[in-house]
Length: 288
Ligand code: MG
Image (tube, rainbow, N blue to C red; front, side, top):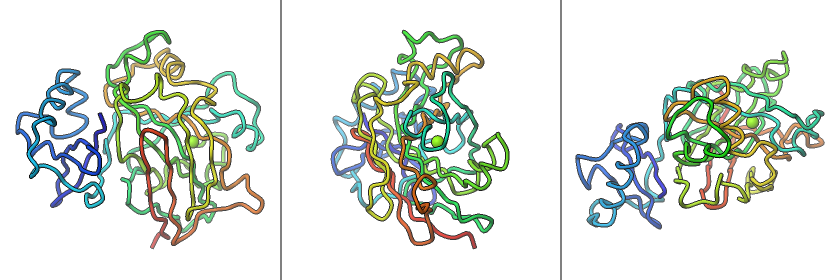
């Protein structure tokens, strides 16, 4: 199932993508979860009820996909964890060895923006880079989750653009500043449940384009730490909770590795596409 949060009349609603339409669940029944976090918290039965509601949805509940305004799938996730250097060629282009333990850093929710919303190039730096990433949303929480059962804890997969301000990322060995500027975390728009994707969302082509020019073109099967391994590693030291988000790292082809660097600038359009999930598209604007 493909789920999507949409914004309409200043409020957000939960929808199901059906071909070129989005079925507005609030128009189907007032007994269904009204946002993605509520759906995750309600457990698998709620997903089954949505499946039934969608089958009998009236035409009046269907909105044109290209007319809806996407909202963030999760606006304030309990945790947003980013994995760095998870593709060998990307680690190499940044001058790093292939890691035997993942780099981890947080994203705070003030940096997140929906699909279609502007990515902000800050006043203080012109080194604005893109990073297309497969992203996990946790369904069932837990601690000490074994790799063998880790995929049972996944609610779904979505797309993240880990837009990075390289000058600030490199000020110290901790990357948090360069990864948390306001308006630098596009997420969504569609969340796909695992039954519609290969196990662990492995084997999916992932591409990033700037103004239509392909900059990153890889496959999620190239991840050094695949989905199940990431969940096992994280839950070794902390409790994962329903609705936690994990961005799994970016492939090679980032702007800072280009000669000259291909930084994003005002007026650009950046797109991240993952096979079977969709496209995350955002304009770039200067901070005013
Ligand atoms: Mg990244």
